[in-house]
Image 1 (spheres, helix red, strand yellow):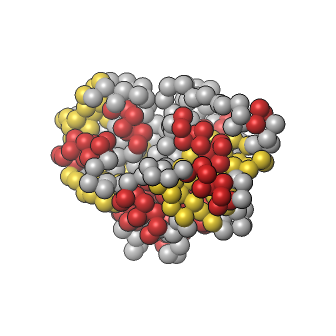
Image 2 (cartoon, rainbow, N blue to C red):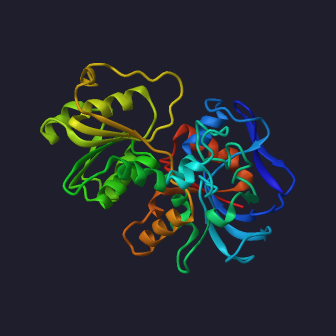
Length: 351
């Protein structure tokens, strides 16, 4: 089969590899749609370490091609959504209700249950072997298209979880820093949680336009205005919640500076390099701030709930797909996403 294989920083592309087989409790899924995530960019740039020879990618919609022994309730040919995080359902973290941290203490400390495209072959391939498939195959309701549900595997689920982890309450003001796919979904999540006002901070006309289209109440362009002064003016001194969705020192620091005393900073970005905590922004530790981090929740029940939200019409994620590529053109897709050219937000990759 064909797969997108990482070799070294800047060296990756389509290769012929052996088609996987399903072991006990596993399934093989034929990919019908996948995409490129910001974390995949970190990998191909050498900013996030993975082993050379790994098939990358971690968001997948497909059709079950093979079922291993021990699986019940699934059939070959079923359309399924597979999450980026694939919990086992049996370890201490899973049984304690922290399924995203599955395997904690067993070699996955930094990335929890994120295996596909990290420690196991990923989704930018014609076929994908799914571990712990009983927990991680979510049947797709009839009537929902691949593009309607694909981002629920990671980007949307992660964005929504930023608002959930922050405990957004009815009537809150929430400011979201970085309006990429995860940030836009964080803004949607804040609205779903009951925020009265969502302020989005970003750059690039296409992303700002999509933010407005998707219901962000106030859109601030960091390129031509004093964002922090405007946030303070709009919020009367500080937001209730700030969600950081990029993973840089500047966006993290701005998120911390934008919340009121007692406010919450919800960090979703993947950071590389050194992250510093300015003591004044942290109120020298006396501001009753709460800082939370979140890895995309995993498991089929999470995905079922998110698909039900889409099915009800509460959320439409399809405007985030701005470009479409065949798998054979995966390097062109990476170049587009990496350069953020032509108004790209999210790409759909077909076999």
